[in-house]
Image (cartoon, rainbow, N blue to C red; front, side, top):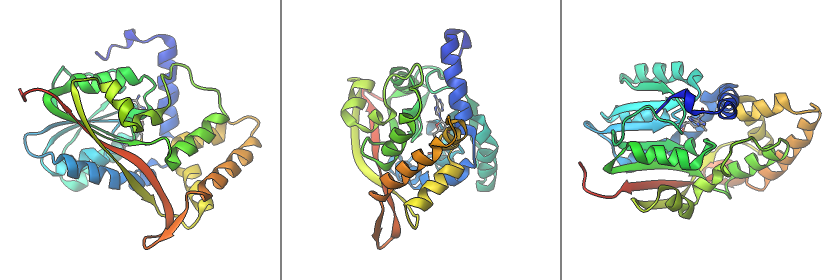
Length: 279
Ligand SMILES: C[S@@+](CC[C@H](N)C(=O)[O-])C[C@H]1O[C@@H](n2cnc3c(N)ncnc32)[C@H](O)[C@@H]1O
């Protein structure tokens, strides 16, 4: 339980690199794009007064705030506490209170079976240790409780975006597998094991941008991992090459329909119930 002595130096380094990477840029603009996923998930799970809810990798609190507004008792956690002042401001504006904890999804400072609901939107899938992160979500979830997630899938725009980014950088040490594996229902069944009954459905977010260039320019200026890549790539001239690949890839995802022009981004909406009687 949250004892840093459990980590090797490499684990600590990976955590610090991840935390720094997420903290770059004005993340709140990205959070605005993700918010409809939080609305969808919270609408499915319907937390309310009496629900003890933990939101893992909460960012600036998209899910946590919606749940607290429905009356749940909500704790949010994230590796990147730079997002917490904004989460607090949003909570204050909404007239609710949420607990915020700086910690790693792979090592939760909460007792076994202490939550009715454990969620993560586009977050836990980025923890390097999949077994550890899933194990922790399962451990703190009560019997009869639920784990709810929105996870990018391997065919989503996000997966292609991440693939291009990672093709220019060496694989970070300590990663168990690709984050997008969490967008596969079969993989989740293996990760969470037979104690969980999983219902999953493919859904899409809509990123409204006039064209591929505008979408890439947005992520390049607001999204921490992308900013980290842009500022650390060597030699710096390679950024133009990487960026051109991103624009080209994004072109194949751009659609125009009654919503206007934009990119539909696929994710897996997951509700996993921990089997057994509610205690
Ligand atoms: C794409 S953001 C999603 C944030 C939020 N759930 C939302 O939907 O707006 C991913 C978040 O995961 C957090 N994160 C990444 N790895 C983590 C880890 N190992 N433990 C806790 N949080 C982590 C990042 O700091 C970031 O806030």
